[in-house]
Image (cartoon, rainbow, N blue to C red; front, side):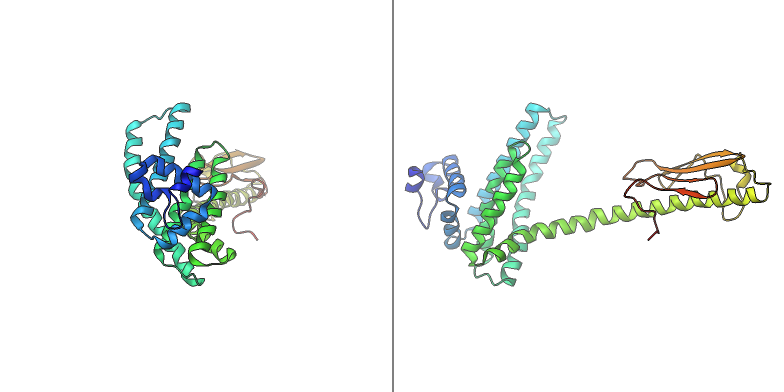
Length: 301
């Protein structure tokens, strides 16, 4: 720690001295300083707002983390395609750079809304240096949790230091980019998928009910005997234009077990969670079997 102190003051940290003491030595000392005395680094962010310096630190930490995790991946579960890894590693650099600008921009909007005193560059610096906890992600199982919790602590501390925000306001600022991103991903991926599955479920349920209704009508006019051949009901009301039995309709396989004294009609998703969420069944008398526990019948209240 004494060696770090020699290259550290209110206006400079080891990262500033990397040309003199060496790149990786400066990196290591700055990482140690951020994990033990982060207020020193954030004091430097407040006075020295060089986007290039901050970006280089952020990029180095992220790339070293990705590289370390990839090495562990290769050691314990070899990669199937090294070409794919090289391509991924090339494209990840611009993604990392853009992500820091975007996250800092989102955060700074809330800095201004909540009365923060510093500028965008200060927010950018805090986001860059608080990313140091990404190095813990190489730890199996607990690494991601440690990285997230410690990263929030550093980010909140840094925002308080450079923007004179309260702890609560700093927490809001630091977490809002994550909330915005998660909200965006939810709107883009989950909502359409959920709507697609819901629509498919409704269509499958309508088909089994429709077939059941026709079978009941048939039995009512044939001395309570049900048809044993699905072709016999094609063209009968209500709206059975074709033989659905044994067919794939909207990602559901329709199966018809027909006997003179009863029937069982089922619609089973080809891929659960992708083409449908549950299997629907209707048996003799038009009785609808309940879907899996926790799954409501579409259209029911």
